[in-house]
Image 1 (cartoon, rainbow, N blue to C red):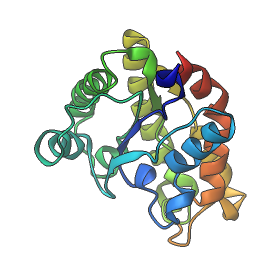
Image 2: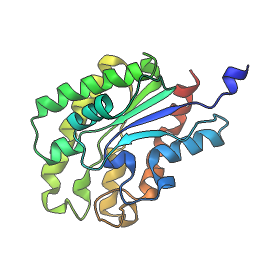
Image 3: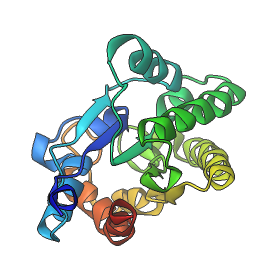
Image 4: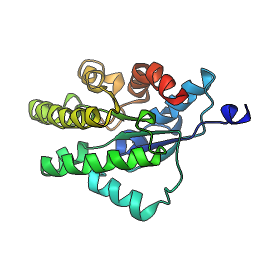
Length: 206
């Protein structure tokens, strides 16, 4: 019984969207998610976040291997990565290969249980003032990246949350954008969490 009451551990892997560029720490979506789960009676420790603004898939891979001791297994692992591959016009084949490797790593870090891993889609920053000049190109490329990620998730039976439609509301709802006119605000991150909370609660209880 003591084991079942122990707080769950959560590892969030990603880039600026996971570390919450331009928002307070308590507004980061992994932190909001952990707080909401705890409110539902599923105690979750403060998430361990391995993410940095500007990271591509290869940089996240390198950080996991070189900069962090991640032999520890987590009760839940999330992955959101790829926007900087797109922004820097890196080969799409490299993203596909790297993403699959990162997903395998996430599964390993979840004690080899794919049911305790989930992926979040890449938001569409073309709907922000920063990306407006290339809105249509960004939309097409983000959709391509997300199709690839979804396909790989399906192959490994990983839960995939499509938050991209929420991100596209930013064009008409500026309160969803942070002060840099590029990244999501805490309010947008809250909408992401509202989308995924029910399924994540089921996932972490398994």
